[in-house]
Structure formats: C-alpha cells, structure tokens
Length: 137
Picture 1: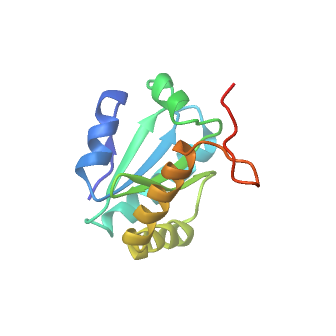
Picture 2: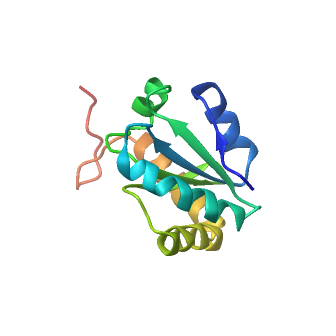
Picture 3: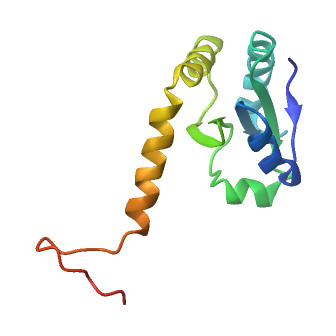
C-alpha cells in the first residue's frame, strides 16, 4: 500500500479507523526526511495491513505542535488507537521493518490493561505513605 498524506482534520479518524497506523512527520526542507521518504514508501508496499501515513509539519504546524514534534523526521506508530512507538530520526529499512514487526507482535490486551491502570492512577487522589489523602491545592 502506498503512503497516504493526512491533515490535522484527518488525523484522529485515521488513527481511530485503522488497526495499525504509522505516521511520518516530515518537511520538504528536511534532508533526513527526504532520505527516509523512499525507505518509508518501500516498506509500506510490504505491509498492506498497515496504514503508512505522512504529515507535512510545515502545512500542519498545529498538528505537529499537538503531537509534540520537536525534531523531524519523527515516526509514530498507533495500534488500536494507542500510541505504542514514537521516535525522532530517520530509520533504515531493516530498522523500520523491526518497528513494524514489533508493533504487529504487541499483546494488545496487555497494552490496554497498562493504559487503563495508568489512567486510573492519574485520576486517583494522591495519598501519603500512611494512606491519608493529600488535599489538592
């Protein structure tokens, strides 16, 4: 499958509507991005079950900011709507294949359970070692 350009308006639905989504955040002026582009495209052809998408950070500055992109290229991988990988820097074909294989191999029941625990911990009131609740400021 060829890579697909997505915009900020399409980002959420792209992640929600596909099981596995890789996102390449790039820019036309970025040398490493230009080097990574053909590798990304070639690997996408080998994995029709994965959506390989691209976000032009110049055209989609708000999305890049919301995604916390501080260096390009940055590759993100989502599986079942969960961000499971994010790393700046261009990868070679072997490294990109390893990322794709690792994302496919994830135990998503375990990942979803971990996400649920993390969300519950974040929502729980803070407590002292003696078990008493710390009042919010």
